[in-house]
Image (tube, rainbow, N blue to C red; front, side, top):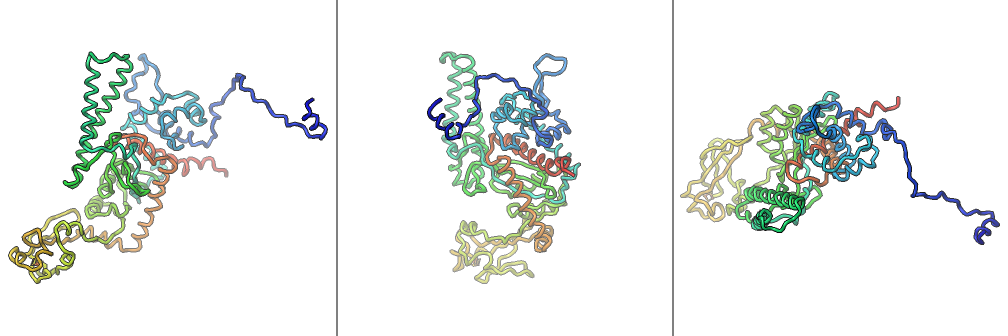
Length: 499
Ligand code: SF4
């Protein structure tokens, strides 16, 4: 007996006896796959929900069919369920999901303990645009049948999501062309029979990578033209695009600052907080996003009775368009600020802005600060309003002592008066009422809850995929996940509630 043990024995205190760890042994365990997860686990709900929809569009292109040779392929219901479960856990990586299939109980239950290759998962996520669109619509149909989609009030909100591209990947036209020329040169060199002989496999991989790079650079040049067209002429040369994701645009983010990203438009049924439409766009602001969203809603689920949107969507054109569709628009009315930029461009001093001119309604004319008349010269119809034009006589402006402040760059001064359409007038009047303002207050809790959930719970802070089409599919996967989670919370879980 060692001295230490002897002392411990004398003192009546034993040395702690610990269980040994045996890492040399081989074990066989039986696993009851069905019992890997509890009865009310969300994975079961996802599986059940997907069992109620038609996934045949995901099956198009499968070559292994009955009566023909070929290895059986992975069930589409399983792949869809895995992705929805994965997004619900905030995991958007195909590799990570593939790893989860090896150890995560819900994934093991879904797959029946099989492993799924990450290429299979990755391809499935982006290869079935029509199938995914159809799945989103079918799930909305099921939710509607359960009373979760009402379309009485629908909020629309835009949120900026970072693209899978850094700011340091943006280049001007000259650099894009240089990269493209280099890629073409490298492809030509590879095709040259005198080029260094590589193994066939390496050569094929290199050629594929170079061709993908060339395609991306060609797309970058196309996107660059669009960016140039959207800028004032003198800023065209500053236009830049990302070489990693040419369709991403530099946008102001919700956290402040600027980053490459996409503007994701989300329409939510205010009744139960279900996403009824989602779309990614390249637009930096929301002004032109209301009408396309309503068109998609009409195709997907139906016409909403009321659309609630923030100030970014409220314009004469949008008010008129909603009126024409028979949809009640609810949104804030801001004070129209004078277009000072235009006055600066025309060299007009602040004392000679339009407010300094007096309108005489009975004669339909203006009187300028020098007491001269600006006559009515015509009108232009615009969406939601009519613009009336007035102009002073050139002879009077040319000899006027205020000319340098009033119309230094034109022969005579012009003024425009705008008259709202009856639809716009009715909207402005309605938004002064307490009832309409109370309805508008519902927007923030509904729309912002959804945005926060998509970003914080489902991990949509940055896109995993690149390019508008794939980003749009990622939006659909995440929105599907969110909707199924809502269904689980509001309907499915109730069967497990204790009496
Ligand atoms: S420049 Fe013409 S419009 Fe302006 S103040 Fe003189 S007369 Fe009137």
